[in-house]
Image (cartoon, rainbow, N blue to C red):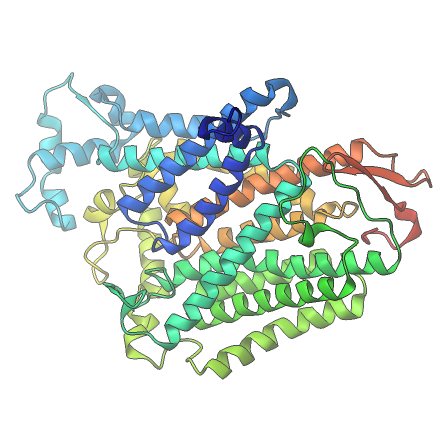
Amino acid sequence: MPGRGPVARLRRGLEKDAVVRWGLVALIVFTPLAFGTVEGWSIALLEWGILSLVLAAAAGFVLRGLARTEWRRTGVEWPLALFLALVALQGVPLPEALVRPLAPGAFRAHHSAEGAPQGGLSTPGDFEALRARLELQPEGRFQPISVNRGETWARGRLLGTLVLMFLLVSIWAARTERALFLIRAVIITGFVVALFGVVQQLTWNGKLYWLRPTSRDGGFGPFVNHNHFAGYVEMILPLAIVMAYYLLDLRRRQTAEEPPPAWDGAEPPAERDWLDDSQAAVGRWGQWVLALFAAILLLGSLVLSGSRGGLLSAVLSGGLLFVALWRRIRPRALAWGVAAALPVLAVLLAAWIGTDLVRLGNPGHSVEREASFHSRWVIWKDVAHHFPEAGAAGFGLGTFEESFAPDTPPGTAQRWDRAHNDYLQIAWETGGIGALLILWGGLAFAWRYLASALRSPAHPLDLFRVAIAVALTSLLLHSIVDFNLQIGSNAFLFALLAGLLVAIQRIVERDTAAGEPEGTGTPQRLHLAGEPRILEPMTTGRPGDLP
């Protein structure tokens, strides 16, 4: 029948963004379960999935009409575009006269490799023995900055697709229902991953999924490295905690007989039972208990993973979360009771399971088999000492292992594939220019979105703005001692949450602009998902409280 064929269904799906919605859910589920998306096949599927969703979203924009789509700058387009341009430039053959001043270390590495022994450069002595050959090379030749063009192109391609994911989510999720839908999808996926990690820890046989042998002794859940598992769940933990507070606040407003919002009939909520303020109180309490249990399990699995960096960053970011929320949550006694009970319940859960909390009692999972903090500190000092060799353009994105090998300090591992500090490594690989671009983009994003999320107390969705800001901060802190941003699943979730933060801020700004100015003494009419909702003026309660 006309209008019911596969083409017609696809068209309707594109117009209603069902393809983008469930495509995002598929990627949210896929990335952690595919061993953290660190292998070539999983990275290729991630890139293909993101590009497919971008094309589907573009088709949907065209079918609905571009005029109906809200296009706004995020404020970080320029640093992102310039950084990607720098990465592309690293893989392009340039005149040696230009490469030498831009990247002196890469220039010497290219020439050293021409006269290197068959086994390659493995010690500082090999590298020094070939330095004399550098001035004897003929002039006028071309060479790329990157010491491994294939790896640089691969990392640049992945980074470009993650930037597209960030921009897509910042535009698509700028509606209340969509933002909450993605947040719930992330929390549910994190809960499943944490539960799987705990169950696998109890029945560990040295194989991921009980089937695939792992070359490392630190696997946890679907992740090859327990530090990367910790980096993943620590980003979801603040969202689960805030979801519990959000549901509690919905019930408080229901008890106060606040009129429920009316959703726009043009696009009904995908999961109305999570969003409908008018549902039964028993259902609301049940959802609150589930959200709280998810937070406890996430925290418990983080403790069981034994990641010291993950635990430290989670503690610091958790303190920031409760400092940011203490004026926004009512009733205060219950809010602080939950805050105090969460770590206690998580420790009790870990003790009840019976697994060694810091994993020192199991030789097969000893954290001492990893790079110790002392050895990492030695590497960091050596990277800083040799940083002038990176010059302005670095050695090439993703080439730390090859470029740092000649400078590996004695007494440490023969080869370091990562610097175990994302900031030092990105500066080493992209040079002074890349470091400045990352600093520019990071400060611009933090000032426009992170700081704004911590300051704004008026909108109900501000709770999730705070949670996302804390989640991003947690991984940024963890990246000081690890390389979580180079793990596919963690980088994907980071980009998705960053896009969500931008989208929610747009929702808040749009709703605030549609209401009365604060301090007028009259109710503000805010528009959640395109429909009016009356919020009491901020003067009726303590400053910073949710209405």
